[in-house]
Image (cartoon, rainbow, N blue to C red):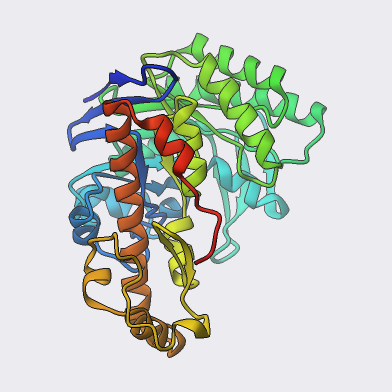
Length: 368
């Protein structure tokens, strides 16, 4: 079962609050999805995610197809049971890996031949294989298999890429066997407005449960990212969920919500935590800096998470510099708490008519 509806819209803009309903629960949007690429969110447990308020996460069909294999996961009750997560699971199709495996792939109209990044074994991924894998995993929201061109690809290549993405989208819809699982088309077209418009129109003509905006945040200029996001959001249907793939800087999320985007995912909060960069209400904190060696204050006095309530910056710096595994867990918990609070604040500001104020006061660019 999948349903999406818009609950409330910004009075003087495009931001909106919505609701995703699935057999694994209800998620209020705008929402951020922690990334559990291989069925695990790095350094935190599913229980941690629940306690932080997350009800949705994203995994990757390509990676789980290679290891441990869809057959194993399916035979053991599906991905929800396998990773002990009772919330909503979104799966990416593996289309982005077509880009990242550029040196070991061969693209045809039927799909992509590639060698595994794990052991070099040869595999073939097609729209049909991708959908079968996602259905086997038991995901609630599935993505169509697409081609994500590099940001500096010439117009002629991106034009062919859009045609291929549309062709694969049709095959994905035809291959779907379980209509209770949502299927999203992915708008491609690089930084070319006419190709983005064409891609959106062709996908809407096929008809999907929701639409993703893909191929951004892959190296193009920030201005281009949001010009294309605004274009696509304005073209996509009002009654369908809009998912901006892979964009996750807090300021960028706020900006995209203002353009009418509902759903986000990114490795930024977890990866930055493992590298010692923390998000706070007063800017970023790079915990390895020597200035925190004698600092008895919490990471963020305005944060109510377990980390800020129990540990000083000095201690967090110490265990990070000492390479203690606990530091990865604590810093990740804090960053994910920051993102959870940010999304709640965004939703509340839209409901109360103060979203413009949030946009004007929000800043994520300064290091404390």
